[in-house]
Amino acid sequence: MSVATGSPVRCMRCATILRNRSVCPSCGTEVGAVAQVAEPAAPAEAAPASAGRPPEPVAKAAAPKKVACALCYASIASGEEQVIAAERPEIAQALGEAVVAQYAGQPICENCLQTYREKAQRRKAGPAPQPATPEPAPVAKLPRRASAPQPAASEAPSAAAEAPARKPAPAPQPFYMWILGGLVGGLIGCAPVLLLYKLTEWAIWVILVGPFVGGGVRSNAKGAYGLLPGLTAAFLTLFFCVVNLYVITRWELSETFSSRYPAEQVLIAQMAEEIKDEWAANGNDVSVPFEYIENERLEDDYPPEIWEAAQKEWGNLEEQERQARIQEYEAENEVEQPSGLLTLIVLAIGMLFRPTFLIVLGLTAFGAYKTGAGFSQ
Image (tube, rainbow, N blue to C red):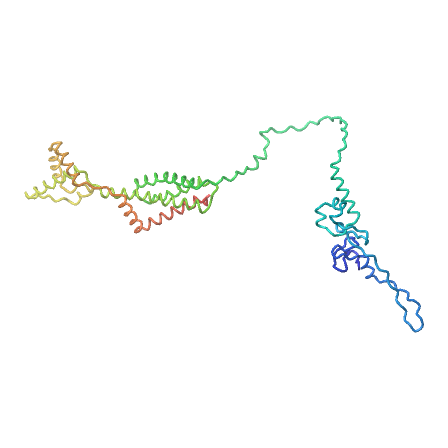
């Protein structure tokens, strides 16, 4: 064993750091025996040689065999160790079942055995009674120094007021609450869309449905964000867009199929047509100047004097006869209202041949998706 100054002592066999131990804990090599082999020994005195014979070498004394304690790695002389075994009651009680099972068959020194035996006795005896502590002598109170006046509670800023309290994240609401919020928002959004269509006759106002539906889904989605609430808002928005366009198309078809002029005005125009033919047969000029036709009224199709004569003739009829003629005309020219299937067909054709409908639907669904997913916040 060679020991360098300032360097840790290592085993010559396995290079394990010994830490002031006499036996290597890894390979069990005795440090003393290795040191005796490694250190140069003094030259042995040779026995006097007889004439003609070489001197015989003197035999070295064998180093005592040593073992290491399995618990503290201390060196134990051969014959002084005790083996850790469950058959030895004094060892099993002192070390315990866990230590015996782990280190069974390994040597142990007397110091470790005594230490564990004392611990076992203390466990059996229980905790030692605590000595009664004497009461401390009363200390004379010193006069209390006047402290500075403390600010009022309302003036002193509290830590809770300085640091903003973090609100707990709201729990996600069930899926049906998302749909309910979107339906309520869509119904609210339909009112301004139809009102603006009545005022402007523009169907592009359906784009306003998206924020209402997306806001309704967002208000009930609470802690849920991302794809699922966004798609829910987008699909509900498309549904309400189709509903609004269906109502607008039905209004347009009703106006198209309905009568353009009142029945009374049409009947007066028929009388004016008869008077016009009579005047033409008598050689009178009954042509209508172009500037008369400007308001798309039936009376603009006839000269003023012919229309006045027709109105006078209509007024000369009795009230019952006038009502009978009106009812007869309405029965002959009754226009059926368009059915729902016809409205859907007209709406589908209009959306296919008018790409602006599809662009408006796409923008509306995209805006509702962003609002419902929470990306706009």
